[in-house]
Structures are given as structure tokens and as C-alpha cells.
Length: 338
Image (cartoon, rainbow, N blue to C red; front, side, top):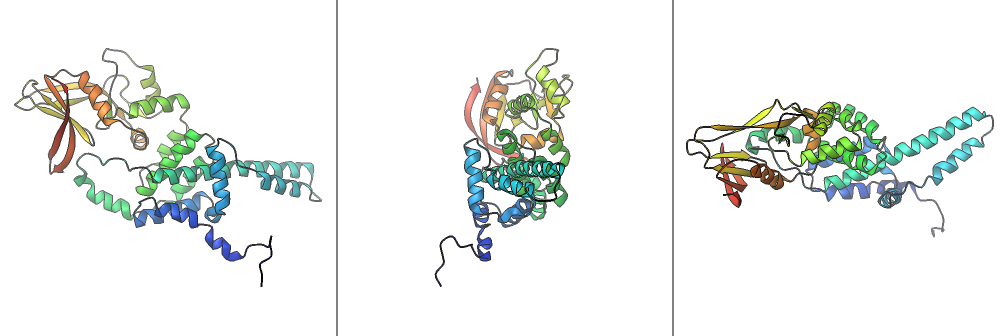
């Protein structure tokens, strides 16, 4: 029998709907366990709508990329149909219209976050922390873990309120991070993210680029408080804006010392033997550290700026090759001060 034009698709077409979603996950380079977590997370995020037609997802994607909004013609038509129903009071009709409008907005935001998560899963993973061999057992346990359903429920509530591109992208990075490593973002951290305003977010992004060993050297060396640092502390992202926290670099009997980052380090020479140099820092809170893990960093720039304000006869920027127990094998990249 010939298939007539305009005839309805068979129910088997519903099985093809998740294909584009699964395809994106397969291309992401995730482990098998992470792929499983991604599918489960997307299913809960979209409220069981992971099987929505690919053409609708692509239509939403196109409109988001054009800074537009989802075409709500279907919901508008549905609202009108209900509004025409008999035996409905004006209050009932108004309630239905409000419900559909609210639902449409939340669905748009959830799908936008879902798309942002797909993009984030294709980004390079954050570099490993210092001496990654110490974290091998933790990494194995994390790989086998599942995302807590309660975590997804809390996340979805935040995601459906993300109406700006900035927040959608941020929530997408959060979910991608949780898919890679369950437990990477605490519910308390999500509350901090939800309350970030644009000014604080920009200030923290600037701070995150300068993180070394989980802390940031304070930009003010004299007594006094920085307003931006105070704001970040009040937002629950850092501590130490009062200038009371310090870190130190120890120098051996030859006057040599190291400041170790994730991928690079600074090698100091010609300092006072068997001494130490203290410097004031802002330290990240748990929430600040978790949020910083998904923000852009420039470790080379951070270490270079640090070296320019540090008193030593010779400072060399080096690339970490590998760890051998507590020994760091590294190669010189450039001499910053000589």
C-alpha cells in the first residue's frame, strides 16, 4: 500500500527521536559509564521528553543561536482550544493561559540548558590536580558512581529559571561536570550560582583566571580592602578579603623553590637559603572552587604575573612533564626574570 502524503507517522518513529541525542553523546568522548549518566540526566532534566522530535530540538537550537525565542504557536493554539471549551469560567481560562505560558518558558530554558550541556561535554576536561596519582582511587570511585536523582531534581529547578545565555551556558557546564564526575557540584554550590548577579560573576571570572594552588594572590599589597574582593566573599566564593590569609614558598639550602600549578610551575633561584616567602591570598570556598573548575583559566598568565611581582634573582616558567612520587619532572619554557 502506498503511503499517502500528509499521513500520520507510525508509532515506530518515536523510537528514532532520541537518535540525535545519543549521537551527540557518542561523539563526546565520554566513558561508557559517563554516557549512561548523561542519558539518565537528560531524561530527568527534560521530564521524560528526551524523545521529543529531533526537528523540534534543532528548531530550538536555531532560534537560540539567533538570540530568538522558541516558536510557541503550538502552545498558543492549545491554549486557545482550551479557552474555547465550554463550562470554563474566565478565571479558569486565565489560569490555563498562565499555565501554558509558564510551562513554555520553563521548557525553553530546560532545553537550552540541555543543548549547552551537549556543547560543554565536547570541551576539554579540566586539567588534573597536582600529583594526580594520589587521586586514582577517587577517580575510579567517581567513574562508577551515579548522579543522585535528588541532585538532578534540584538542578532542573535552577535550569528552568535560566533565561539568559550566560546562565544557560553556566548551568550546562555544571551538568557536564556532574556527568563526568558525580558529586563535583554540591546543592549548596548550585544555590550560590543561582544567586550570582552579572557584576559578581564577572569579578569571579577574572579571579578564577589567576588561581594557583586553590588560591589567588591578592592584588593589593598594602593594608586595605578591595571592594570586589569583599563582594566575592559576601557571595560565598572566597575568604580572606581582609588580608589575613597567607601562603608561602619554601626555599631549600641552595635558595631554590617551586610554585606548582596544574600544568605549569615557577622555579625560583637565588633566594635566601633555608627560608620562606609569604604572600597574601584569597582562598576559594568549596562553592568557589567548584564553580572555578568550569571557568576558563590562564595558568601561564597567572604564573607570569605572579613572578613579575616576586623578588628573586631568577624565575623560570616550566611545563610539568610528569610526577614520579613526590618528584616533579619539568621542562623550562621561558625565563621570566633573570
